[in-house]
Image 1 (tube, rainbow, N blue to C red):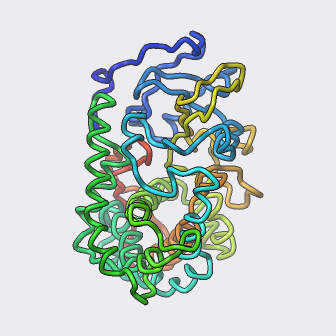
Image 2: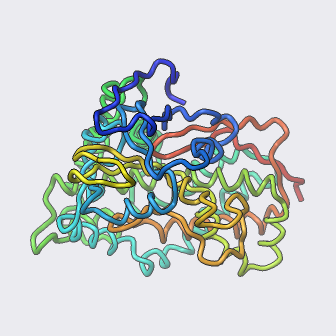
Length: 414
């Protein structure tokens, strides 16, 4: 957690917010997070709570509280814009990455460029390399009978895969990872302080990718960055400022989200050996169950900005109002998924917004699915039974992307 919640100011209640919609919820300092990130978000929801509540924390904003609201708001850019997607709003206004800050139709050609570089066909070509990276990392510690999963695997595997995909040096990872953390969990007690942190990180990304873009313009390489910067938007070369935002977005997504997701589901498997046994017994159960794993352990809580004055869920929303979309509150909604806390590897059509939704559905979902599938396959091939290390101290962090540190795992070395 990057600050003491008691030091964070509360915004005054706007005239359009009914008093009974006010709840004290800080997305960066969730109450009870020591017991788990998803548990903390679920604690926010109360019986009979409306679809939208308002919190005076983080600059003051609405929160969608169930699966229907999260999915509906993601899907409708005409009412809920991506003009600002990070909170506090002061920080979100400093965020300059594209196309996540665009709405259709401006967004559409940029998304097509992303989809070209991250298509299922392109990602399938990487499987052997992804598998090699995973296997080598696990082989490096399997004989020890334990590992710090956060530092020895989760913090390396998806990063190494992405850096190879982008043809960037691994030596740059610590610097870029720090920028990613400052974007998704910005330090500061006030909206202004958090905005300053995010702004510096955004500028750091732009400064880093500037010479990379210049070096690859006109190139014929098959790395992700070369493909992106030499793509056309509406018949012309992608504008330089948009190229900065697009390549920076790729780095942010590749260096933070999957890194943190891996830790959450490995904690669960360490505590539930019966799920591990199910995957070992049937390789198809593992492959088919990956979508359920994504359903059960979402880590993103981004926002949308109200695009125009509207009525929604019985309240008046004003243009510029912000709505937080905690994907955990979709996944754990029992009206959308029966027995939502159970990781049911045979669940049919799990309902979730782990990859977002609407026109901004995560472009990297094919890579993320492959990385999780390969991790499970290569891990269970070498470490069929494991648990949490008795000295493990789990530290959960909330934000735009949640994180967990201290994931120490142990097993009997063969």
